[in-house]
Length: 186
Image (spheres, helix red, strand yellow):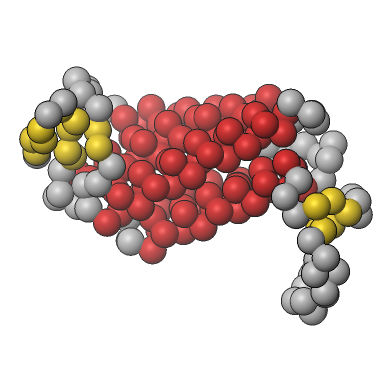
């Protein structure tokens, strides 16, 4: 494969527009750009979880997610392109079920925290939810594939479960919400 980016700056975006994958020029605050930009931000948030050195199984899962998020960004950047499949959504479900199997059932809401890796994972979860909202907003005016929305919905659930796994693995435990006060759970 040759060099994809031989020149990093082009000056073509200096006027507030950017190019889509099909060559169309749109404002940088276009709903499509907001959607794939937030997916890109999510990918960076996942990288922050990985930078904390999570357990190998979590790291392997999240590295795969990063590649899929890059594919999703490409799908959103190129109108009419399909990159996320129902099988990828099903893979997230299998990962979620596997990681969740060893966790105790929840009786209360979990507050973000539980150590650096878990907190980073909670942050990635909230960015994922925002990316999902951006796709819903885009879908009001342009086609967005069901698989893309399902992928982000499942991913936010997976990130929640991984945050719980990381809180326990790191020894910090989870903080469960309780109206009017806090309590620590091991």
